[in-house]
Image (cartoon, rainbow, N blue to C red; front, side, top):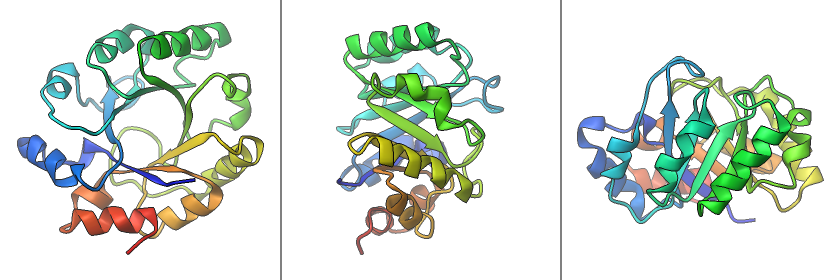
Length: 213
């Protein structure tokens, strides 16, 4: 499987956000926007006014770290985003998850479900035939620059063994050292913030995450 690289604007220079996006557009595959409400994740981040003004040809990957994802998806679907991922922990009910996945897909986006480091794959076993991607968090959600938690790699291996064609995304502490571990475990979509936006040569940083030079 091809490896997709998804820069997260959480580590971008917000005073020059459009320039930051422009600097990675030619080299990246998707662009992730972390939406945090200060409740589900202990931080506040981007809302639709900022996202609506971004100019990019990259598919926007919306990572909802919020307590009420069902109430938030429409505002992003109206912008034509590429994918929306919500957290399993925020929507524990099976039927509510199915309804949310259906709404995202009917709105024209890919639907993903995210797992915090402590949440097992078994928590979403009934979802795996209904979604487009699983996001395995390799840090606790909320802040960029955290240390990678290698124990989550076992979840990636478990998912890859059971679902050879599933898109598995990883987010948190992804850099030139940890990216090979993620790829070897079976991840196919790597989200990186600091490793890309703190790099002087963003093309080189993205190529390294992809496994090239």
